[in-house]
Structure formats: structure tokens, C-alpha cells
Image (tube, rainbow, N blue to C red; front, top):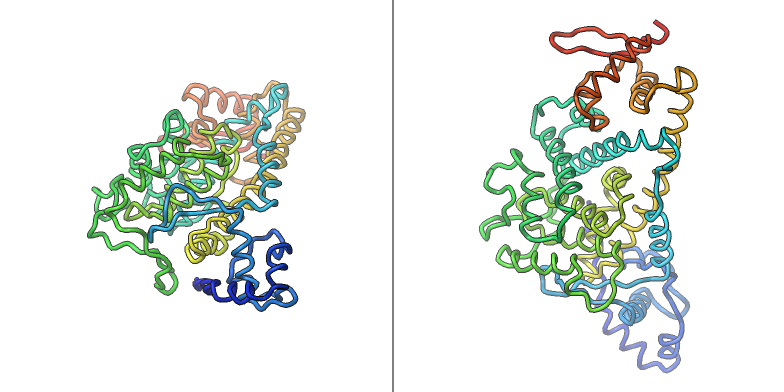
Length: 433
């Protein structure tokens, strides 16, 4: 992608304004930011307020933003502290996120909702594992990646191995890593799971970059160097600092937990501490931070799925930070919008599945459990689709015996037909046959 234009030096433009008494008064009393917190690359294409040229407009904005921005306890590769501001729009979105993530998606009085919970969480985890891997170049499709995870077959290439690793890493994060504060060792352990059997040198799994590792962030289309991360010698200390910030140990004033999770994502990706797998690790750690802070509803949506559909905006949000003196506000603005969009989608999608299960139960028998109803719903949507005991286990995180019982009872009820293919028994819809 094309590098965004770096902002001009605002000092001279600001000095010219300051010498003019009327302009100085306007500078001190008139807001010229509409709350969108535009980067120079966007601002320069817009008409400035009356009496200001684009460079002067930028200088005024920089001055006003400096009054409200907050310095963070970690730096970029050039030693500049990361900063961020909190425009009024942030408070509104964070309030929506707080309220929404504090809700329970599953109605405890609805048996279908309770029963479909595990299946939905597995589906979202597959979506995140596949989308995050595809974002980083895994040569596969979303359909194939999900089928791979559902079937449990061995990955056939590096791209499929990335997907399987990412799914396992999310499970490790969800069940183990979230139980403890973040440490450099924990970050490395997560990275090792994400990159196992995918790197040229297996020793690089879970190991910070070495001084002789030549790592740059480049545009895959034309090889343009977009960003050069900090030297490897700084990484151990930088990772310690980032973990301390994430755990709240170095906070001198309140930083909203959701903002802190986003800043962890940004800083880890910016440091690029590993030879590969940095993006996947950063997005996984965002989930860790959300779950660790009690935002359990974060399990119900895939950040990477939304990012994958708008990857240019995602990359630009990083580059805006790098080209704006490490002001992270643009990245936070983008990430908050992604979160808000994700939250808007999960409830309607889950409600649709619950209503579908209730309809199927009414049609085929209320004694069917939610897992069996999910099998029938899948068969109805996908003509010719088959299930196995193993896929049913994976779909619902249940034991072998429970999976066999579910499918056998559906065959006995005349709702599924079974056939053998080698040693595997395949279950398909018998409705209408």
C-alpha cells in the first residue's frame, strides 16, 4: 500500500500564527477539530477553516491535541513515547462497549440458547483462527480453513498449519494464559504455539529476534518498506515494560481496560519482537487482555474477520501512528470502530440460531437436544453436507460417547442417514429422501 504522507513541521506555521494577535486569540479559543481526529494525510485534502492554510490548520490541531494527549510508559523504535488523546467520540463508543460487553448473550432461561453456546464459541474461534492466519498470508480460504478445523484432519501445507496453530493458541489463551498476569515468558509461549512448524528455523518459535535478524514490515505487493521495528537488543526490556503496562503495574492514571488492550495490540505489533507471527500474536493478545479484564463477551466475535474485510484501513491505522510521532489515537479510533461493528453483529446472529433451533424442535420433536438441532440446521443449509462423530465432537466440545449417542439417535428417528466410507461413518440428512 502507499505510505501516508508524514505531517509537516508545524512549528513554523504555529509561530506565524502566534505573532498575529487575532490569530492567537482564535488559536486559544476556537476548536478546529470536529472530533474525527484526522491524520495529516486525510486533513490535507480537506478545506481548512477560514483564515488558515492546511499547514496552519494542522499546527493548530497539533497544539490543541497536545493539551489533552497522554504519554504512555513505552516508546516507539526511535525512543519517542507513544501518546494518545481521548476525543469525546471515544467516551461515547467506550460507554457502548462497556454496556454491551457487560451483558450476557445467553438467556439462562432459554434451553436452546444455553445449548448452542458452546457451538457458537467454537465457530467464532475457528473464524478468528482462519481470518488471522489469512491476514498474515496463509494460502487457504475461509471455507477450507474451517473445514480443516472441523474435521480434525492433518494440515496439508504451511498455510493450513498456521490455521491449526492459531486455533490451538486461542484455546491455550482462553483456558490457561488468561488465568495469570502477562509476562514475557507467556508472550513467547503463545508465539511458540502460533508458529510451531511454520518457520524456516524451528528455534525461532517463541524466541525474540536476534541482532542479526533483518526484519522489516513490507508491502507484499511491491516490496516497499513500510516500517522498520526497533533493534533486537532493546526487545527484552521493551517486552517487560509492555507487560507491566498491560498488567496495570506502571499506570499513574486510569487507562480504560479496552484502550489498554488495544495499545497492547499496537505496541506488540510495532515492536515486531519475533521474526514472524507478530500480527497473529498481537491480535491474540488483544483477546487475552479483553478476557483478563472480564470482558468475556469478547469470545463471541472475531476481530480478524472484520479486519480481513478491510485490511487496508487496518494497515493504514498502524502507519498513521508511525508517521504521526507515535500518536496512537488514529489506531484507537479505527480499533474502536471495528469493535463497535463486531458487537452490533453478534446478538442478531446468535438470536437467529436460537430461533432456528426452536423452530426445528417444534418441527421434528422437542426431545431433541440443541446439539442435535444444530446438526439438522447445518444439514438443511448445506445440501449434501455430512457429519462424523469427530466433527460433532469438535463442534460442541463433547466426549466421544455423547457425540455417538447424538448421531445414533438422529438416525433412529429417521432424521439422518448413515453410510460407511472406509472406517469412517458419515451422517447426512435423511429428510426428503
